[in-house]
Image 1 (cartoon, one colour):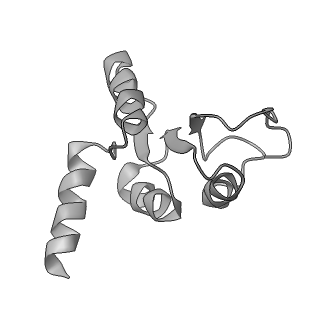
Image 2 (spheres, helix red, strand yellow):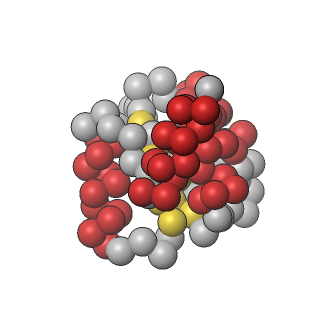
Image 3 (cartoon, rainbow, N blue to C red):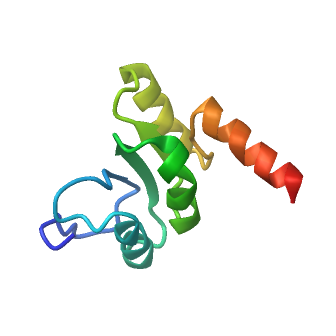
Length: 103
């Protein structure tokens, strides 16, 4: 995060890849949430969503998208989180619903 652009005002949306060099992964999400309390965060990454999506959501992201997603899926993700909705794949949404039902 040290090399990240330092905006003069809080951004509406922050897109981050937790796999980028010098990024501290999920800890970077927590740092962003502390710095930008009103911003929404979208993780766009190549990390397997079954392993990382839930951790990122717990850290404060508003969406998780694989880099292999289509341009249309990327646009939908930005629209979803800008409107206050969670954006995850159907696979992760199903997993989250199952986990919630089991509690």
